Length: 555
Image (spheres, one colour):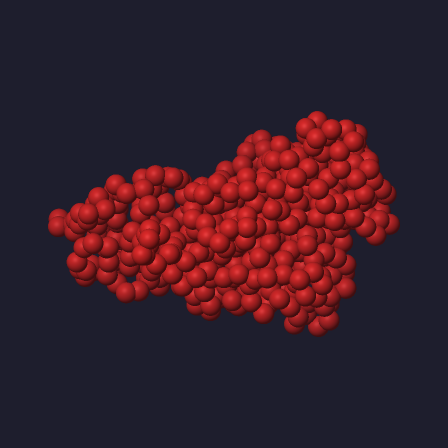
């Protein structure tokens, strides 16, 4: 049994904000640990995590050097808005919501009526939303704006389930009646390519079709609507009742969320992807007791911060910035924002830049107005990461916050791999998987299912050459590796679906998946074991038959 030695003189600080902090140092075997317990008496206390400098700084206390302690804890300050004081600046989310509400200034906690720019719904929630709209506004009522409503069948599409098929029929009837301009219909289930209007997964299709624009408010009847925050807009999921009201009025009552800021700096290692970054962040925000692990060359520094009054990021904005974020493509940024809801976040948002503008302007001529957080904006918490020190991670069953390093799970035998969904089924996701397969030059040892998110992604898989692969496409590389043939674009087995859904977990198997949730029954069988991972890690695991760190094939 490993022995632990704990420092006999912990540092304790009590500040006027009723914060007590206790720090211990101990070693187990050859690993050095610093352990911090924080008792918070102030509900607005925020905290930050840094690799440098190696000292702890506490608002209201003297600085004191702490051996190997690399954490800063602070209470965020909000300037008074009373007469004679300087008004606090606003964050991106606050600015977007203020503009949409016709107000000059808002603060977290304000309840405001917001004008909606875009409302999206799909085959699962659309019938219910339209049903509520008709019940409350009348059978002959008309929607507030037929060109601001986007209807995208994508969830239960390629199935013989009559109820699922009926959902799409109901949506078609409503869209014809309301003259909805953007209804991406599908009628021929035998060949998706025979349906030029059909797109696929709503969150990816919204971006590809030019419906995501900086500075706007986009709502959707799907929790992963937060994906669109990658474009510098406020995007969040809502329920059918709220959607029914928006259909009739174009407005929604929202409470302004406080903002947590995540600053990611450093050069992204070649073996990391955005999925690894968000799984790092998710573990911070999902629990009452927050675990943050930053990997250094010789030690693991684990910080436990408890009792933060509201668990994790619940009803908070997660704003991402830093040099690493600036280097990400739009698809990688979409992956990052896609999973903020797994941390309880209300929305995720990334400051728009040239990358954003180039993507958007190539897909729409609709004017937009980007916004950015003020220099004196107030953030409820700041987190800083040196991305260059992070390693590939997975989320073990049965929660996205059950994080572990991929290399620590090398003994986990798997039955299958699934690459797809709004999180991991975009063009660059398949490019990444193909790159690893090509580098390895081996065949998969377990069934590997490929589900492109949209028609465009499917076409890219068959048409675009993979860089460094001698002109081969993803489809050619996948075939050589022994993967299943890329299937029709949809949400597929990400959320289970009818029993005949492609790649659904109909048996209690172990699956490495690029999807976003791994709760019991999420992909089908309630005893299925789902390990969430990046496309690199998923592809590497397919080649070995167990959870595998992609560096085995990429370095």
